[in-house]
Amino acid sequence: MSKKSGIIMTAIGAGVTYLMRNKQARNKLFSTVSGMMKGSNSSNGSKKVQRVDIN
Image: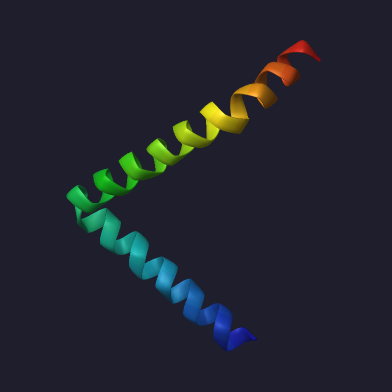
C-alpha cells in the first residue's frame, strides 16, 4: 500500500517538475484543461451554477 502511494507521489512530483521546466508543455496542458472545463460547464455546470445563484 505504502509502496503504491510512493510511486504515485513520485510520478506526480516528476510531472510537476517537468511542467515547471517545460513552459510549452505547461501551456498546452492548461489550455487542454481549461477547454475541458468549459466543455463540462456548458453541458452541466451552467445549470448547477444558476440553481446555486437562485438559492
